[in-house]
Length: 115
Length: 113
Image (cartoon, rainbow over all chains, first blue to last red; front, side, top):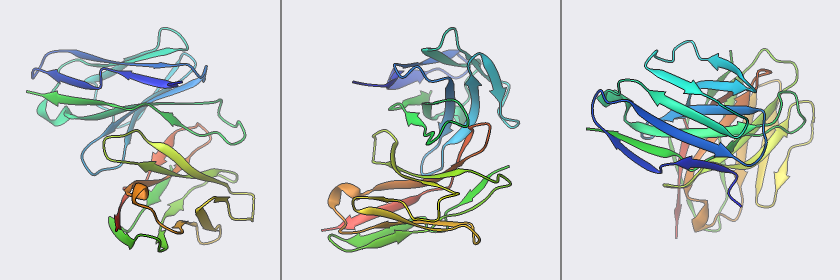
């Protein structure tokens, strides 16, 4: 009964080689998020979608982009990964803003290694 | 913008004892929720407990309870009868009306057998 699924769990990419991380959800939630989490740090919000509306955090590098082709899927594209982009990437979903008891549901994450 | 502060990078507790993790936040929202999430090593983030700001009663979920002090903007998590499975990173989180979840820096909890 997995609800937020991230693929792959582990991804190794070469410096500068584009990479795409995937997230799917079975919860039919309107909102999907991408977070970057480096070792022993808090998850850092990169961007989120409310339905098809894309919301970028002000400090998210241009190197990071996202696509949401439908409610269930969301992708994180890193155009030219650098060594500093090595991290755990977390996908999360939630209901409509303002919904009572809204909480975020997380996937297991994709650990990205850049070599 | 939301800010969430956890001032305890690491905590330890003896098995079966009680431990309290601290969190303070700052928000301009009038109505909001607060959450504690648990992230075990190499496992996914899961919700531990939530608090609605307009409710004065502190939330409780089995061995987990919060001490919510709205005026002080404080939201601490108390874990009673600590178990080995409670060992994890704990993050305090506060969403805004745009439903953007912001997390504190986390507290690493060690449970000593």
